Length: 130
Image (cartoon, rainbow, N blue to C red; front, side, top):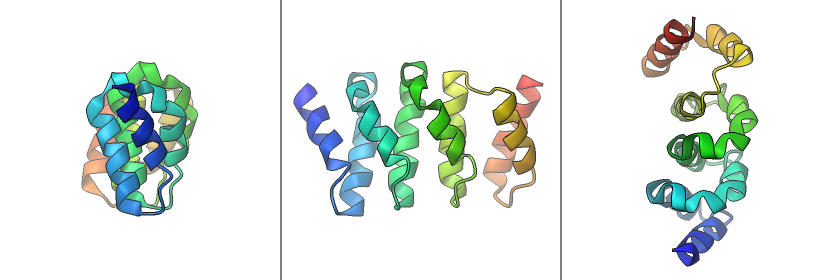
């Protein structure tokens, strides 16, 4: 219940990277009942650890339109230094219906990304929103 969500939200600021990453992952697994952790998840999007950012973006993808307040945060993650983080940010934006002209512009810049899975996802989205 809400006690677990509160404890997990607080764990997103723990000093151990893996505790933060696991907390974000578990909040994603809980799904929409964990939406009260949205402010904490948004802060986790700028964590130094790649897995924390990845899992936080995944939570937002699962929460979809209920988490659309985080669209600008996700937009900033599209050019994350780790492609698997950008992939989750893009998935979250897609689930929120947040593929607008600004996002399309960034996606066009990233169409030739080195990472095949991200490149594929970008091209699929661009074909659907064209």
